[in-house]
Image (tube, rainbow, N blue to C red; front, side):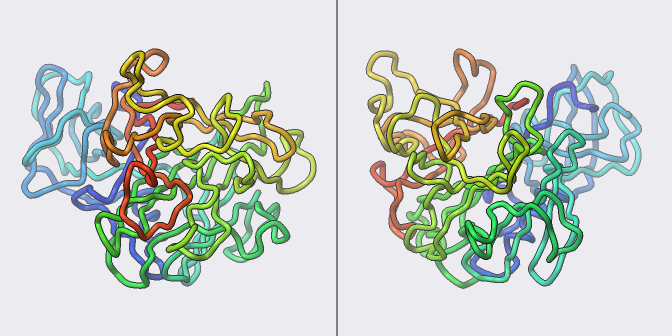
Length: 400
């Protein structure tokens, strides 16, 4: 790793200048993930690359997608330490900066940079079909199959392995649990109007959030957050089947396609599938996603289980880790890394998607980015503090 800081966590969103658009058209989710998950995007040739006082500056003309705490990939520099993944510390008109251990100087060569991809591989493809797997050698190697043939949603299934785009073993959820796979919303409209989205991950798991109603009105911000990838297991020695896929069970984006999403921690919903039990036995199992200590249904940033924001006592924001729990009881099988639930109400009034809160206590030194979730309401209405929640994600890392 050329960077002097950890670059494992990568975050992307629709406000990036060169980001791919997501819309109510077939294939738009796959096109988005090919860009952010596999290939990177917004390739640019800088006019110069120089180092002064431990800070590297890429100068260029026009715009670029880079944002503070995002990760870029630099190549072609004569100064080897500047090549590879770099975490952005500052951006401005015509420049991007990052920290480096390289000596002061000016780089030469055929230099280019782009947004670094998340670190997934595309194993198989078909007409608006794709299968992805983490490229991390320490991952569970489970595969995400995406059927993006519909306009308003994608259908998703996890597999222990696949041999082609239509053939796999160890499906989760199984066909009997959710025939055809779960639903990930894209848009309430079947058209090319772009929606608001974000995606953040560490190369072994990613979280994808979308506001499907945004295509009808920019006031319709209520979001649905889904995830795929490896948890941090509770079991000593690891969990060879510790991969999760969170999904909806309804095909109606305008109604309740936020059902069971990870921002709405509901004890009674089991829409997070895993390929097997932690013992390695059996087949697909369904789980709930709960914050630690939860005793009733709760919506992050909406349900005031711990009062309203800001806290009356401290003026602070409560951030609680989220666990994947078994369908038979509430015993945690593992933690969803980098993801935090807010057991306070009214958070939407103070935070909007993309806003950053500095971490405190055990999260000191971390930057936490806000993302919209739902309070189990229609996705095609204007967002308010009563119906639109906020979850937070650690964009600093590492998560493991």
